[in-house]
Amino acid sequence: MTTVLRADAQRNLDRILEAAAALYAEAGPDVSIDEIARRAGVGHGTVFRRFPTKEALRSAVIRAHLGEMLAEVRGLVDAPDAGKAFVQVVWLAAERCRNDRALFEGIERCSMDPDVAAAKEELHDTFDKIIRRAVRSGAVRRGLDARDVGALIGAAIQATLHAEREDEWRRYVQVVLDGLRPARR
Amino acid sequence: MTTVLRADAQRNLDRILEAAAALYAEAGPDVSIDEIARRAGVGHGTVFRRFPTKEALRSAVIRAHLGEMLAEVRGLVDAPDAGKAFVQVVWLAAERCRNDRALFEGIERCSMDPDVAAAKEELHDTFDKIIRRAVRSGAVRRGLDARDVGALIGAAIQATLHAEREDEWRRYVQVVLDGLRPARR
DNA sequence: TCGAAACCGGAGCGCCCAGTCCGCTTCTGA
DNA sequence: TCAGAAGCGGACTGGGCGCTCCGGTTTCGA
Image (cartoon, rainbow over all chains, first blue to last red):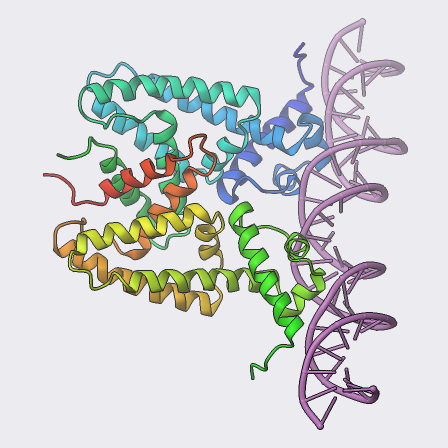
């Protein structure tokens, strides 16, 4: 099925993925294929041979990111303090969204891709375990799942994309994080 | 300067604004002029005679919304309980964003328009008064201004745009609202 | 070394959309 | 009623972008 690519083709493929990830991170998920091809140093025909559509390329990049996040979250799933693990995951996700402008929006948009959907689900399942433990330990309010928390944190980051101050996003994430604790009284 | 429009022209202008507001609310701030013109029942040339650019139309609609919000917020600026007034303003803004998909994103995007910028500033100033009183009364944490709160609430709403459950947004707004209270301990 | 298979990339197509233009229609004030 | 001003809208332009195609080039196993 998956035959080995010729050396030059593999090199170009790597360059394309690298360029796409960089441009998505800098400019959002709507960068044109031409721009990506230019940055990768290839013709845009080459991009379309590897990825039949613009969406396919986006999905591939997003999938890679989700894989990395999953590995990180898995490393925290059995941490002794569930509340701390929860906070750590949130900050990890926030940092990622902050450094990659397309990540949050892109994940939503690529949900029709079955591979992305599967990766997302797996990530959510893992995060849900942490959340449930954190809820049981009284560190997090009831009634929230991984999708809720992801949406809220992602949104807080999005809100700071055009902010003037560089560290704005940390304050916003902290506000949401405080809001995620059990309601008072 | 502002001469009176001919009756038919005024009618068309009203229709255009109405159609634009409706489509922005339904489909976001990137609806094409053609679509707006079609919904308004006019040719798109007519739209461009009233509004020199697509942005001008967007700005006009946004400005109208900001004017309405300003009136609402002004009505709460001298409310006896500053904390309650703050919460009310937040829910008002949230409801508006919820009902108008383009509002939050559109306000950011139209900030170069001087009229929109002025309206925004006036709204912020008014809301800031409420926030300062609420902070003093201990209902809201320090270090936040109207821009912060608006960004956070808008973001929470945006996060629920593609949610399956219809009332998702209320939960999210409540989380942010709780996060906006003074930090514990 | 050499030929076939794999690969490359830019010209070109079709579509969408913002914005312009002008011949025709509609309104309005006298 | 009527002339001229105001308004109308569709044809058209130009630019951007996703995507295709094919003639030329590169790679690599035999």
